[in-house]
Image (cartoon, rainbow, N blue to C red; front, side, top):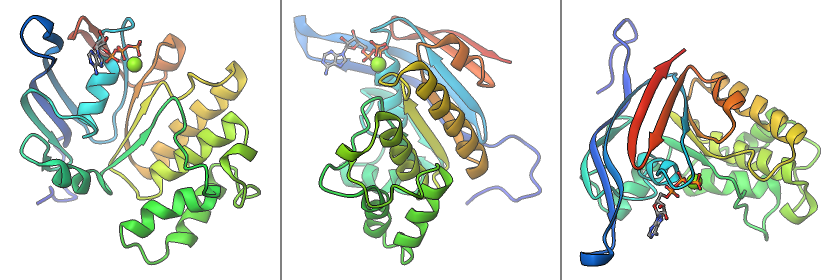
Length: 235
Ligand SMILES: Nc1ncnc2c1ncn2[C@@H]1O[C@H](COP(=O)(O)OP(=O)(O)OP(=O)(O)O)[C@@H](O)[C@H]1O
Ligand SMILES: [Mg+2]
């Protein structure tokens, strides 16, 4: 199923071939992604850059299984994302993929601890509370376990979102402008945390950003333009 630990060939964790995304039909049809070929190796850090509207968020949504491609082939952490139905995709995401978005998307009626523990419980993890607490401690929020999102700063809410994304120990961590809603200093701290936690977890890290300095911290920079890959450069 997986390669042996002694394997020396870099292991592809994402293989996308000729991915397309079109929305609407007939006259109103818009081609948002127009043939994306991308192979990502386990442990890589990759920044996705490009002008507004170039398709970055759309590509991230497809690679992370939130949206379905219109065409092409996509293997993610050993699962064939193009062959799965909605339930299958949801199941395949679980434990493989963590997602951090610009708006933190925490559940307002749950504490920080419950926000992180609930997905673990739903996945049947027995020590969900203990794991969630450890994850929150790791992002520096050991003193905010029982606070509700409205009682947390933006930076703290994003830390909870990072803990929630990484708690199930996903193979891949996706982030879409994770510092976009934060002031510069808070954004820097959150970015540091994302890189550190992804590395600790051994997760592949793929981030959409408009911030060139942030992108330069990644081992690879892929630029999109008008729904296609314009350049793909490894540091
Ligand atoms: N649900 C939708 N229906 C129609 N068009 C859409 C939809 N979602 C996105 N688009 C279009 O797809 C294109 C790519 O959008 P996307 O959000 O992926 O861009 P982006 O590169 O993430 O931009 P930004 O930097 O502004 O976040 C845009 O032209 C957008 O208007
Ligand atoms: Mg976007």
